[in-house]
Length: 301
Image 1 (cartoon, one colour):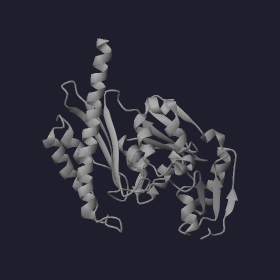
Image 2: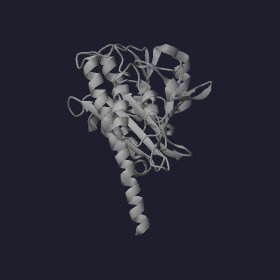
Image 3: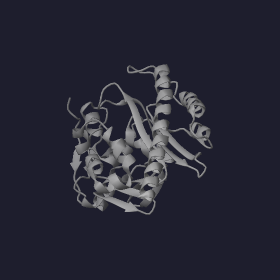
Image 4: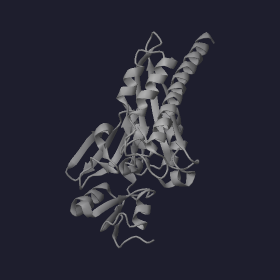
């Protein structure tokens, strides 16, 4: 199919793009990587009167380390992040998550910020941002605002962005050096959308129990889901089998009743979510233990 008629705009300055967004309100959409938006256009599920292509705005192309987080600009490609030595060293969990996104051709064009803005509940990056309690930067001609992930994703393919605003930056908080982390998903085939997925970050206490836990899921509801009930069950434990079983059982209940579709029933998703919870938590805690051993060996050396 072919997209409906629209007027194409390709500004080279951010102020120009924001002015266009302010002028046309809900009749204009932003084009960055286009990996989700262009198919919607071609299927005529989206039909804006205007499209603003931001790919020529060089000030939006950056990867920067800030105090407390990694900042990624609106036209930085997923593959660029995946291959960045800086990101590999400073935020390996983000690299691991990006490797699960579609195929390389998708990542070559797709942007990190675009995936967040699209807010697909089956996508990997929104779940990671939710897990880390990250932030996004929204800008308009009237100013800017920082929005927490828990407030940004409001429903299926919907966000807290207002007409005239554009997402210009996403901020992934740093992972504590002593923490263990993992990301896993279940998909029918490599490159397919996952049926369910989870990101976990576990920080140990001095007594080798879990001091804090962050875990978020994709594919279990209409938006990425932070599982506070699961996190609370883990704090103070050594993630023994009893704790893992309790976490898995609690995770079953976060899968929304309306998640049955042509790919899986809600009950099957719940079974997958329970198993995935145990696996991702074991992997995260195991990584933390390996890091401890490596530190001890370096100290002895």
